[in-house]
Image (cartoon, rainbow, N blue to C red; front, side, top):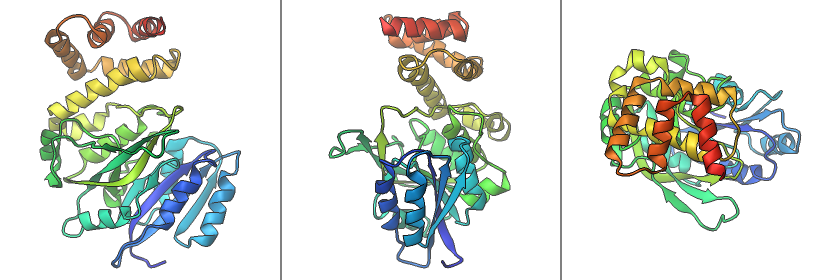
Length: 324
């Protein structure tokens, strides 16, 4: 492998023997028609099925692949293990049940041909498990045209801050010691993005789709976690409407749609919702939506319950009402 590596794909893997072959095949198709090289860092996180065997077989055939085998420590620790040894100018975190388009790496390289943005945001296809022949276009950056923007300019233009499909300039992550929070199992992706965004100067967006995102029944929606560093280092970001909309919508989906009907109340869920519920930006936004909404609906009910009751009570009330 040449020393100059353009991008490092980091793929955490845990008991994904049924999904992994498609992901690995998409990696083998990656190429850049220039001097940019690619590496694949595959982290086996204590799998008990044939995942590790598939990774080792792939590394024998694919010289660009590096396999890390560690005891089960969670997806954030697996991503951090890959990030610690990555050599690429950029890093891209890919889930092992998703897969890249054949031209993904070339698209990312072309975006950086004239500029060196700190973060690259792309589009993707969204695919529901069991209907792989139906691909839906997923546009995470509504309101933004293709191009390179200053960080605050991007936040001002975008309707909501996007949550996935990003490549990060590794120098930014290393110089500011940005890693995934390993004891945070909900919101780790978005917390990582906010940290990186806080220290970034420029964000590029391409409307080309570089990956297929598989929505599995067992998937956990990654949700927002407010990071103190954002308020300290880029407080103007917290004032942007896109930040506020994203915060409200993601917490709404988390507590009412995704978790309430799937999981009983736990201390981890409670700590997460309590942290956001006490944030003045979110509380003001809830009041704004209550006044703006006409009538009593699911969204206003959700907001009133969170305002009037402790998190532990409001969550259980929502869960009780949703199960009826």
